[in-house]
Length: 102
Image (cartoon, rainbow, N blue to C red; front, side, top):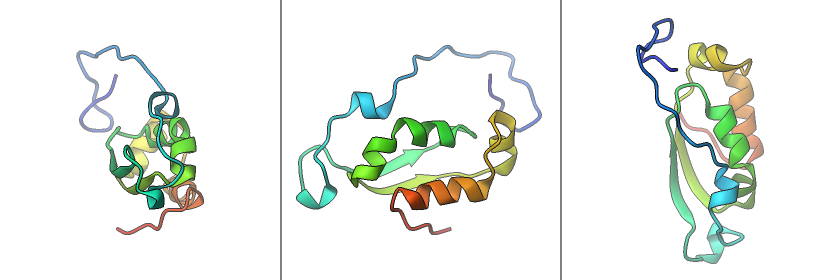
């Protein structure tokens, strides 16, 4: 269950099926090849579960088929759902070949 604000408790929750992006999307090997299906912009808004999303999309992100990515990084949410610090998340994104802007 997630809350809109860290420290608050939601009264309801939803079950969702989890699937790795790498298993769902078949894309060309590089955005530079201009293949149909390349991702121009990937928005990730998952309230502290960014490390899990990036892990599930690692193959896509490493292959360069995602042109740009927008995501939030809130230290309280990251701590709430795991042990990833913001600087670790930033380094992970850099390791995929992205340049960070804030």
